[in-house]
Amino acid sequence: MAGDTRVRGRPAFGRRRFLGRAALAAGGALLGAARRPVRAAYAAAPAGELRVSLPARIVGLDPMGAQAAEESVRVVSAHIFDTLVVHDPRTRGYRPALAVKWETPDPATWVFTLRPGVRFHDGGALTARDVKASLERMIAQKGPFAPLWAAIDSVDAPADAAVRIKTKTPVGTMLANLSLLSILPAAAMNNAGFFNRPVGSGPFRVASYRPDSELVLDANPGYWGPAPGVKTLRFRDIPEIAARVTALITGEIDLTYGLPPDQLATLRGNKDLHLQTTPSYRYYFIWMNVRRSPFTDKRVRQAMIYALDTQTMLTALLKGIARPMTAPIPSTVFGYAPQRPYGYDPARAKQLLAAAGHPGGFDTSMIWNPGSGPQDQEIAQALFSYWNAVGVRVKDAQAERAQWLDRLLKLDWDLDLQTNIVITGDADFVLRRLYTTQANRMGYANPTVDRALELAAESVDQDKRKVYYGQVCEILWDDAVGIYPFELLETYASRRAVRGFVPTPTFPTFTSVTVGR
Image 1 (cartoon, rainbow, N blue to C red):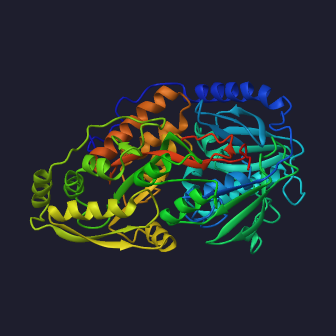
Image 2 (cartoon, rainbow, N blue to C red):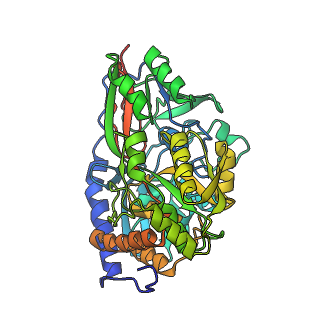
Image 3 (tube, helix red, strand yellow):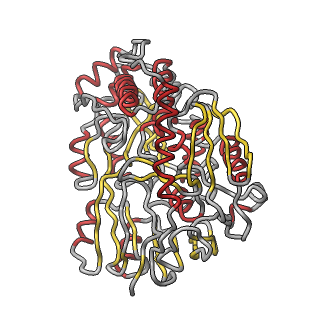
């Protein structure tokens, strides 16, 4: 239970031995594939244009800053920048990208060999110095990914094609973390205005960017990998759902997603459209600021959960695009461990509130950003109604995304409603990044959780990692640091002319897509 200061079921194992052997095996297995010539994906040069509207506005093009974890930033970054390795959702492993091989001379040292001949969009050669500078900037920015790099001791570039990362302790999540590190040109990344039209080495280069309006990318003719399918990739900001649906139906855009059930029902009858549904790493949650009264009391936090009829909410608002959640992470994610649902029990909620000294309830507020997820407006109103029924009167503090994010990061809130996505498909990305004492994202601090997540991060034995994440799921669920009602399915709606798009549980990529008009 949450009061137990031991890490239950802690396995005994040779951590250093496991790390070295597993990393060498992974790097060696992938090296053979990386050395083979890249096969051209398309016989013809990139042609045509793909027009995409994301569920939320593109809030910036900096893949390392305060908004680095925003969905729009991750999606566009994957097309502009490269990473050393990329996550493969099919195998839950990692394959080469800018790095063609890696090895661990000792458990606290990783050496990556870079792909030769890679150039940035401006023609400059990509070297180990750029990788070193990019990782150092990621840490210095203190953005949402910075906690993943707490164990870094040093980064150096012993040769143009070699990067050496030394850590204070073994890091079993090194590859997962590096799949999030966009490589930028060291000589330009800190220049004023760089992220108005950033330079990367990815399959597309920035042609133009108008914030809150449109981002246009052109195929990179010098890309080291398979050529993109389209010559132009255009991201249009259409945050209003009805407007996005209309744009899809009329052919103004070619693809979108993040739509509510009522809109999907309409689109399914349209012969010009194609719908694809897949499980995802995305979920809804409501955090409670553990630093602020009355949420400092676990009984109050549990009462907030018992007050909600999440099954009715799911059936009425999210039918066909969500399913019940039974842990602080989705069931699709590595490390998931199911917990016993709280259930809908308003009488129990009132009892807990009374026991905590609030027999008449209390007043509070909830921040959220409209457009953050399907049916978010209706979900917010349902939450207010259920909580009001047990005496908790919640002020609606919705705000534009920039203001919402600023308040969220400053812990200037009581309740927070939002969606999140486990970008790497690994529990570490969410649990260690958000729930450690050091992360301090909702005022929660638990040394047992800290230690379990530390051990999980250092281990490369997948079964042992599952044990640790199971412990953390149980503790967070019992401590009621948040409410986790729904994990989302993702449905992509596209014009019939769109070919080659493959949906995945994480953010979509469009490099392989072609459009025949």
